[in-house]
Length: 110
Image (cartoon, rainbow, N blue to C red; front, side, top):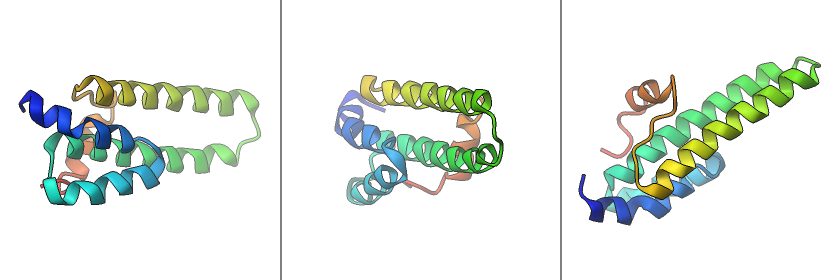
């Protein structure tokens, strides 16, 4: 992937991590250009958003402040790591789950 492609996709790559609505906005805006850098970050953002909702559903049934705070800190670090990758123009995969997100959402952006 060349530097021009990365520079063109940075903005939508960043938008992809701004909640699931941001991911949808980046997805629809990327339909015309089909930027592979943006598509990578859309897949990571979509996977991270769905994982967040799934785990938050389970965590919400527990009544423990320590578990809730650990959950928030964990996902904050993951989102910051992903946003940093989008801003710096790198293809940083989410630790442990990034390859799975790329595989399960492989039809996005192709």
